[in-house]
Image (cartoon, rainbow, N blue to C red; front, side, top):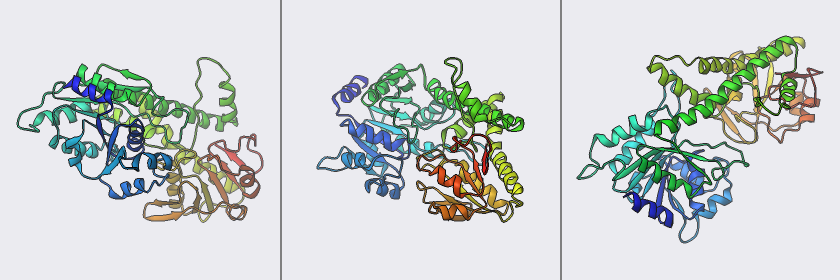
Length: 442
């Protein structure tokens, strides 16, 4: 079965299903389809599929032309369905479903479990299954493999590494980034058996320039967690330095810029109003949860999380201080938040620090509005807010303007000139050195 599947992959006749069409799954599906591979995009949300077919670019930042090119014509290379029965006729299924955290910081693997159970019903000879959804180390074998081995999917049991193949390959998508894409970012693969790794690696070589094979799914799972824990801890350090510099009356951005001139032994990370996106604030918690089951304390992860989560309150304190200097209180103050996407120039609001700040300010009885052309509407608890048009008149009508996302289109001069107070959490007003005039930096 291994040789047959490898031949299918190398010939381009392999048929791939991508389960979950979000920030990870859709770019992967489009990427394979652009290589001439027949791809089925499977998602249980029909509205999401309708949006993709309509080529709405705002879905995940994929250029609409790329979607149209692979979805149209007499024989489109990418088709869509909500029906798991499509898996009966595919050679490979790649799971890219969400893996959020529950309110009690416990991993929610319900989407992975659902996909795995549906795959089991249709598991067949020569099938490859790859999990890309980020999770705790051991998930691929403890959840998927155990499930697949628990019951017969056909009249006779299928043997792992012989009849079917299972692996983990961490996604490395960075929304909005154009210099590193799926194609030129090395792909890590770890299979349950050597043959599982080999088959998985062969599939990804169709799409990416470099494939890195590791010894097991657990090793591959740990790779993803190390990458994002590294970032979380270092951002936590940058945030702590921001707090220290603030107490000492030093510009943390100036310090970071100067430290960055050292050609070795230092990599710059930057402070901000809190962590956003799925990866950095969430992924380390999967590892912390797993280690807690083993009675091990993840000290660095816990401390970094504590510091990063405290930044929202630090921003609020900056706003309160700035308002007090103008003889105003936070209660009843009109505050305009610029940016609710978690990073600049994307429409992704997962774990958005901007939305978190808005919620916190509303709870303090401030009158809060926002502007973000990438995100026309948000919900904060039960309240719906619409993005306002950014004009000089709008800016001048607010007591305080807070920059929480440094979108490249921002007219910084206009913002500084027209606003009574600017609290800048992203160093978007970098040319205004120090806390001069109405600009207050993190």
